[in-house]
Length: 99
Image (cartoon, rainbow, N blue to C red):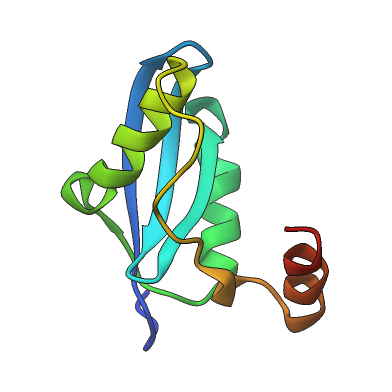
């Protein structure tokens, strides 16, 4: 099923100190990071966003690189954006107020 809005791209980050991870991102930023074992739950959450979901490791690579560096202790801050559009307005205000 396709939806008429921003695509969400899926990719992998494997063999991390936390195990294998799945990463979801859009052209607006990071959408989700989830353990590989939770792929069905991630798929269900992404489906509820009513966006087209596409496997695309190339689009995920910048996120995977920074997350990998962080998990290895080589990075403390991230340079990528978060796609705030996936959150409801009330949730977004609550989250942003804590940053």
